[in-house]
Length: 264
Image (cartoon, rainbow, N blue to C red; front, side, top):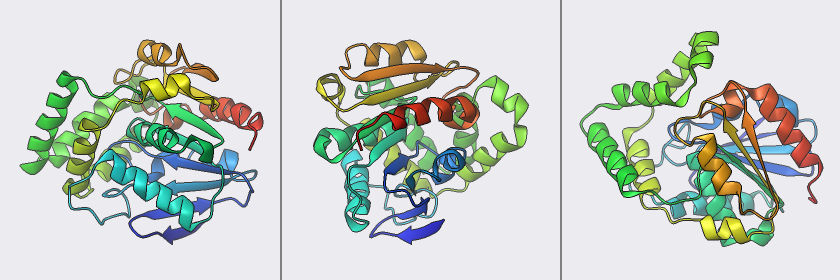
């Protein structure tokens, strides 16, 4: 493993394969979200796992972020590391960033993997919820906010099976820079829809959704994928919104099968 610093981001590199996967974490996670994918993939692929601006080791954040800021940072990493035709994989907010990267330059990628995410822009109701979150964070409520959000993210089964892991996610989320969380909420609130891109794209697309995901439910993701030309959709049993962590064995099996068939 190598820890590398780009202009704005800390990122981690695993494996020595000539085919690359860029994993993009969700809100309010960091790169550790993907630690259960690395052992299954590092022998055959190079894996790039960044901390988005304001999360994990990427502490350079003033709270004023757009989705384009994240996307610019990620393109910068690919350029600096001279990475050609990677697969993009993102969860939730990371899926928003992956979709927008692919929309901006589809010819630069070999495939797209979407975990527990959506292509639609925020509804008015969702925007108001994010605005309420900004207010809470500005008034010092990060600990309560993080605990409440993680309670909704993870399935009941995961919390029962792995209480220490669940608590560790709460602890890490409670320790981030509040400006990073505020910036992320603003970025998600202001992002554009990528529905038309996704439905017209020729890139191979794999979508996975936790069976018990209440934030981006399977019915919603199934609808999102219904008109995708070159896509496949899988429901991950016994998992919530953090499916690749909660049921990593099932996710890794589906993911490796998808990657084997890609024209890198």
